[in-house]
Image (cartoon, rainbow, N blue to C red; front, top):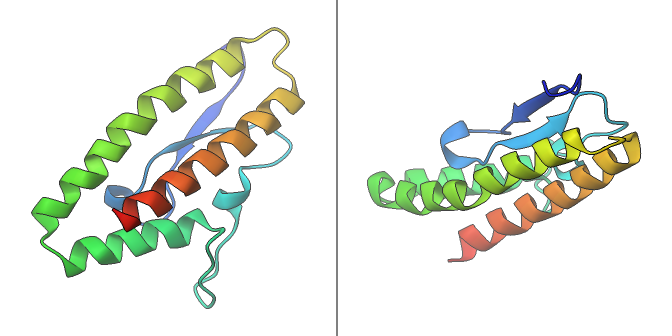
Length: 120
């Protein structure tokens, strides 16, 4: 929590195959890609399915080699997300609309990054 703004870090699916996303607890909505997903219908707009695809790819390949690609992507994304989340929380005023826009940006960035990771 920073300045009364609580942030939870969420990773859908298998944590070893995901990137943790900051989610403002008091925002009007969570990032759309983090709120979508069904066990019965695979979709490209769901972070859960993007992570599941990566986790399945890791299990089907040599895990100790595949994990290096995932960890590199995690190291590339998570520090920037951390900095941006705290900057948004510290902004004056940290309005619901700025948090909602942050969620849109984060959801889009993570979903795109995980789809790109799978196509590498």
